[in-house]
Length: 391
Image 1 (cartoon, helix red, strand yellow):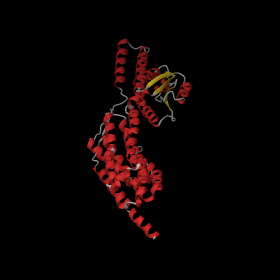
Image 2 (cartoon, rainbow, N blue to C red; image 1 turned 180 degrees about the vertical axis):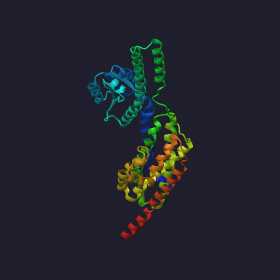
Image 3 (cartoon, rainbow, N blue to C red; image 1 turned 120 degrees about the vertical axis):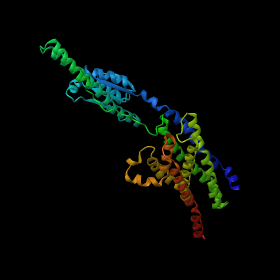
Image 4 (cartoon, rainbow, N blue to C red; image 1 turned 90 degrees about the vertical axis):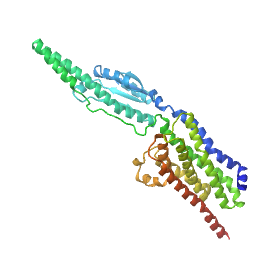
């Protein structure tokens, strides 16, 4: 207890304990409200429809204005619309050329989509997905419109053919039935969402949690390194390492309460339950903390710089919270099994969205923690070698 009494008098130690908690609270209180209703906020994006065709294009343009889940405006001036998009007034321009109807009747209709690539990544992705889905709507509406035009032209041609009225009517009726039986699509889609979670926050919250965990571990380790440094002359390194273990366990038990409490405040559910969420977050933070402290114990403050320089970006990339690991180059997929972020990222995604058991991820994190603790303990031998060399 004596070592803890000395540590509690050191401001670096107390601030080091508070930083991970305060940083999480402040960061998540700012970030969660910003993304909580992100799905609803997408409707504020604007699309400009430029229609130069007064037949099919007119009806298609009106239909798009009804079905698109964004703000829409129509104009006939493409250069002005593109200038407005470049100025950030809209996210995409849909251009229907003046010969659109003629092209459709020839089976080669085309619509151009202009997407502003200087927009935020999520906006670009939303517009690209929208452009793909619009084609289905356009094809269906254009097909029905062309079918009506063909029916009208057929009836007009029969009227001019000089056939008896009864025969022309009978042929016209049969032709209309034949046209009506034509379908653009014969196969309907049935999309089933597996491990689905409603809400935009669940998509980005795991990344935010990982970010606050890692940054909190870095700052806490720097401050605790400064707090423990004066004790090396008074207390054995064994006692220091044991006190570190006790402090790390305590803070790891407390730190998940911030995430769980804020998730409850903003009505963000956990698919695996609160208990499982607490265990995942606690073990994940403990593992990350000891990984960072392992570098600090061996290399002091320069080791912290190495951890930040290499491990932080590497773990962000391989965590699976930004990019799927399957699309990464071979180097990243090769090192990902040896990084805690891989298992913490997977377990946090399951925590929000559901899925198979997280027990395997948790046990691997425990194993990694044990390795980091052992490597940190080996600093005793490093110290003894240095002492022997001096003597």
